[in-house]
Length: 325
Picture 1 (cartoon, one colour):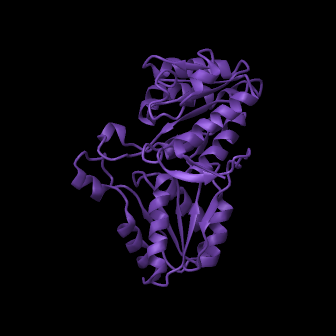
Picture 2: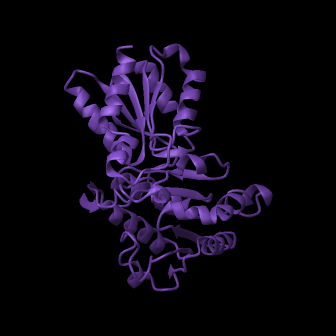
């Protein structure tokens, strides 16, 4: 085991896969000479050279289209967006080309490509740089969506994403790149589409993913002192979604709270709540509660941001509301 930062785990996953397969390359803004906007590709230009680590212009639609075309012709590109907010410029390439080409070609062309970079809010970055797009992309058939919460998961899931023959949206967070954790030095992968129970519990199920897992685990830790046992599930993957793990947990705890960094309308927590209502309704002893950001664009003001963004206190209140309804 060796302690590494989240950004180092990302670099390790990409480098290990590039050593294994020469068809893999990385492109994006500042990935080469600058070692990545958040240093997630540090040292890769020195090792692999400028034929496989490519700095691009600020033209997401253009370099995403190049990557999609190369994926259809035998390469396995990794596209880094400085922030997924910039992926909106390339959304036609992602949704109308990468996600659809396998079906539209009658299975003649695969599109093995990873689109990765930071998503969600990261403090005072303003409304246009603080948006969560995981549920947006998860709405599209043909895309897989992965959102890891720690360095161990990030490395194992990214290696699986790079090896996948379908396009994968791999979402990180600026606020996680410095997180440290011991991970195995030997090679490992993690399966896409399998949730992880980060903490066993008996009183209530708390589902979350990404950097909000920190809030979920902190909430569970604090409630443990009050003799409330919270089962914490990390989705890891938004599409395909591991329904069975959530259903089995709800059957045990009889209560469900969903903590998600997104606007409240038509998001991942909405899908989970509907699915539980369909498949485990008789096991519920209280209505499902969900915690999201406020239904506004992210405020720049630190005071307003603290109210807008989900926190431990909101999560505790939601859990208490389903326990003591």
